[in-house]
Image (cartoon, rainbow, N blue to C red; front, side):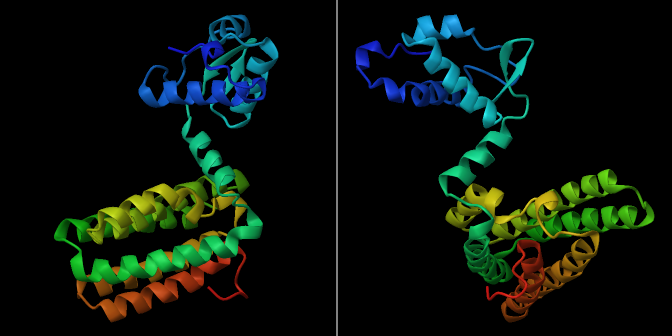
Length: 250
């Protein structure tokens, strides 16, 4: 499954990165799956032809990225490795709170184009999916309003609503019928949408976004791209709160 590095004569400083890459590649290729037990440090060291310290450094990095988890002195592939891909993207693009204005600006550019093209090209199935997604958001908002739970329950509602809104925006991207725009959205959606627990999202804001999203869908239903883009502008102005950018220009 894994390759010995000796024949490549690669500098020792690059061994941990190479080990990480091989483990991630094995995940992508299906050679390893979530929950699989990793070889021991000694086995890795012998198989890769590197020192145990290099193996240990690589495993520590993968554990930090949530690719692997430690249990009873051994490492396993994390059951939820998707968190790794998000962290990797955040690291690669150096995205943090200081760069939220840049992220929001790019999101606005994309969302405006989604709205314009969706109003022109959305199919009956696209509209059906948008309505279903908004309906599920509305139902969850009603439940959250009726259930005055604690912080933990509110966090659960927030996480669900965030995912539901991402699904709604995914349907907008799909309605453009533009394969490249759809791929761009899929590639960057994890950094385009702040996580509920690390942003200014509140149930009140979710409710406001839900009502404004209905205006976007109404414009698309009427094939009125001017109204749709205008509704998106209003929506994005509300979204700005979640990025802590209420006083900045998009």
